[in-house]
Image (cartoon, rainbow, N blue to C red; front, side):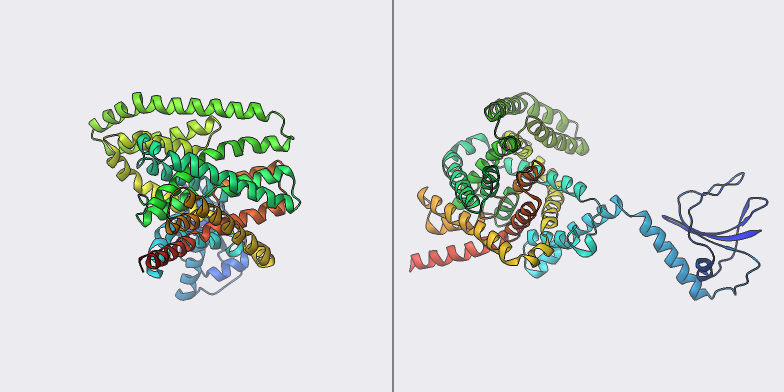
Length: 484
C-alpha cells in the first residue's frame, strides 16, 4: 500500500510517496488537500529509511492511494491547500517565545515612526501598544510570556539610569544636595503622609496606609527623565530640581521595600531590618567607590587598547548589569546601582564612547519598559468602575502636583518653574508596581485593591506626557503675563 504525504516543516513543504512494504520514500504528485482533511487528521511523524531521514516535521497530511477514489484536485485548490498547510505549520512553529520576540521587536520598530507622524509622544505610543497587545488587550493578549517581557523591560530602566548617571558626577550631585535632601525629602514625607491619611479615612489598615503612602509618593524616573531628555531640559532649573527629587525617591525605595514584609508580621524586627539596610548601603557605596577608582578605569583602558568594539560593548554591559546586581543583592534598588556606576564613569575619558555604544540597547529596552507598563491598564476594570478609577488617578496627580509646586516655590523656583516640576512629577513610579505586588503577596492589600491601584498607577504614567505639555503651556502663559 502506498500513501501520499504532504510534510510541512518550519521552513519547507515537500510531497513524498511511501511504500509501506519496502519503506522506500520517493517523490509523488500532489493530491487535493481538501480530500486529505476528510480522510485523516493531521499527525506528526518522523520517517526514516536506510539512507534518508526527515526532520523538523510539524504538520502532516496523508491520504491512501487507490481505493476510495477522489478525483485529482485542480491546481488552484491544491495551491490553496498547500499554502494553508504551510501557514498552519509556520504559525505553530513561531508560537511562544519566538512570536513574543517578533512582536516586541516589531513594536519597537513601528511605534516611533507612527508617533512621529501623529505628532504624539513615543512613550504614549508604547503604552497604547502594550495595552492592546498585553494580557488585558486583544483576545486576551498576543504576548505569551508577560513575565519574560517585564524582565527585559526592567533591564531597560537599568540601562537608562546608567546613561543618566553618565551626565552627573559626584561634584554635580553635591551641588544638588539642596534639591536632593531638602526638596526631595520634604516631598516624599509630605506626600506619603497625606496619602496615608486618606487611606486611613477610607478604612484601610495601618500596614496598607504605609505601603500606599510610600508607593504613591514616588514618581517615575523613566518617564520624567525621558521627557526631559527628549525636550533637552535636563539642564533647566525645573529639570535639575526634578532630578534631585527623583534621586531621593530612588533612595526612599529601599526602606519601603524593607518595611513591607515586616508590616505583614506586625512590625517585628523592623529596627534590625533598617540597620541591615543601612549596612548594605554603606557596603554598596564602598564597593562602587573601589570599583570606580581601582577597577573601571584601568579595565576600560586595557579593553580600548585592543581596538575591539565587541569587547568594549561587552565590558559596558557587564559593568551596568554587574553593578545593578551588586546593589540588588545587598537589598537595595538595582537602579541605584546602575545610576551610581554611571556617575562613577561620568569622569572617565571614555564617557562619550560608552554613551554612543550603549544608546541602541538602551533605546530598545526602554521602549519595552513603556510597552510593559501598558500591560497593567485593565480596560474591563476602567469600564466597570470608571468614576472610581478616574477619581483615584486625578486625585493622585492633583495632590502630588500641588505639593511639589508649593515646595518648589519654597525652595526658590519661580511659579512657572514650580508648576512645571509639579506637573512633571505628578505620576507614580514603576517601583509602586513592585511595592503593591509585594504587599498583595503578604496579604497587606487584597486582590481588588491591588488591581485598582496598579491600573491607576499605569494611567498616571500614561498621562505624564500630556501633563508635561500642559505644564509647559501654563508656564509660557505665566511668563508672558510677567513680561506684560
